[in-house]
Length: 323
Image (cartoon, rainbow, N blue to C red; front, side):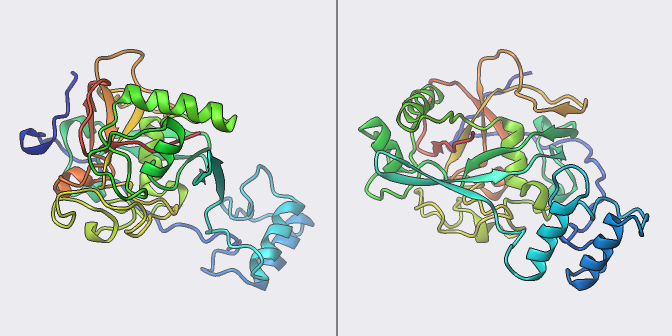
């Protein structure tokens, strides 16, 4: 079953279905080998004993401090730097890229496994196309810290037909999926890199906060006003990016401001576990995610999804880059 998402007063979604029961666990503290809730010298001593073969306890992966394969000397070095304050493992890794004089930031998202779809934090919300929930495993990728701005779009394309112009830091709007592909092609020529739109699964994982997720209903909070420009606070227009709080990965405006095109064709979910899914092989409408400035809180959740003809454009539709 396909569904075309139409915004403004004509939008109509249907909320039905039973919700999956999900058990949430507190996120481990990186470097907390002993599991005592903090990182200190006792963790260093424990890891040394593990490396020397004097401690054979099962630490449930906490001894793999740097997350790179097995437990070895690099984990000890990383742990010592954490204790000394030289490394903040919770600080997102970023890359600043300049295209025709305009800088933008990409954030590294470590690979991981999560449950995609309307999980328990959505409460009584959740549309039919957000079910069934299913397990998704993703490889690492990078994603834009913000939505693509007017400044970046104009630097690459030479012009800008967004409805809400005037502020170069507003997200570009009124762009079709096809125009996004043209923009990305030119951006890749300018930078020599291989940008693309995020897959739908990547988008949701990033919106949820990736491996650092705290299980919020919206991207970074259970209080939507903290993180999103939407119907109740937008004043009927978009706003400059990064003016609300970021989510756990340091990403801004994953909900609200403008809907974001994804790479996938829109289609129904499957209950099967998937690895690096890219959606249906063909279709008629492309996925959009995240909600926008004219939408209610219901349409600005991390699991909301819809589809739109790739040749359509609205003043609350934009894009975010991935690589």
